[in-house]
Length: 159
Length: 288
Image (cartoon, rainbow over all chains, first blue to last red; front, side):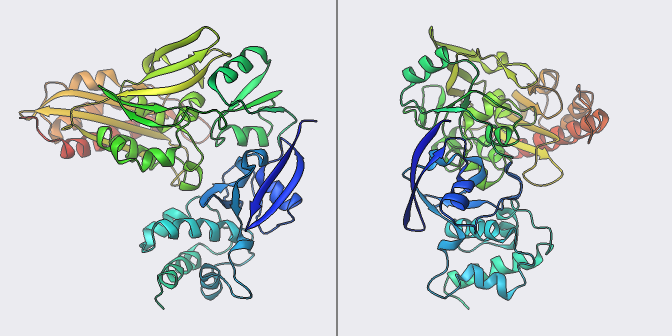
């Protein structure tokens, strides 16, 4: 079996493991790092549930190999909340019924985190476009869009 | 759904890469991974070897040339989209990229990957056709160039030998006064296009002096609509002209699949050609 030593920083902590080169980043995060907040829905880049930040940029973690993330920095949904406090995006999802079963939520939240970082003052169309690559089968998206708008305001320091 | 076993290679130079390609049997090149990784995960592709292009130096970058702009094959779609110099030379690129997947895939997806994968519905090969791109390939016998018109051979098969790799794409520029537009129809935003149409127009004294119209999604390979272009040149850049040439686009060869029949694709081709030309004309600055 073709194996490599892979070491990456996830949410500020270094995780190292010797893994098969065919292991994708999402499985590394879930199995080797034990960070099961990143969800796997489709594993072919369609559902968006596995979205994480790679050096600050949103990527599908099922569409890259763990070995390709060697020595790089990843942020997962576990890295957002402070000590006991929800991140403003997470709080907005809670306030607006932005989740029901919660399966798509990590990908939604990480997509919005990346998007709001680039565009802090988006309109509703911008938020809809930002989450167009994330599939939710429960909420009908209205609550998620409302959460995105509230989160953007909160991150700008408005109430 | 996990990739089957393969041996991973991470060359650091183009020479190493070409040597690997020449020596390995059944190797696949991994660019941005936004098409190959799904195929590996679904085991539609089960290569013995995967050669990662992400570790090879010198394959990324955007530079102006005397006649246009040269882009390294591993340049990310997100990078292309945010490059103001590139947008100044060929604004249709940014407009087309808006339709390429989602921002979460454009962060990894590359221009060379898309052009080599050659999905019939892909936008970037159509952009390359509009700007008469020249592709540079590296192989065991050195480099060779292929004009984009000779690149698609058949459905998802480019003019690329098994031991070759696409390393850069040179787009030829148009006069700064040209108009452009990229139109697409898909069932959901970010899905594969059912039909996509891009066009470039140059106008002098109210008359069209040069036109490029490319279509993707309708046929097994993307192509230029030469009949439409011919019908445009010399005509006034008016709504009537665009309605007339849309009739030509409506009889373009179009394939049927399980979701959409050929007649619907033809109808879309006519509608999108007219829309694209109308928007491009509005953006044209008359050269006189």
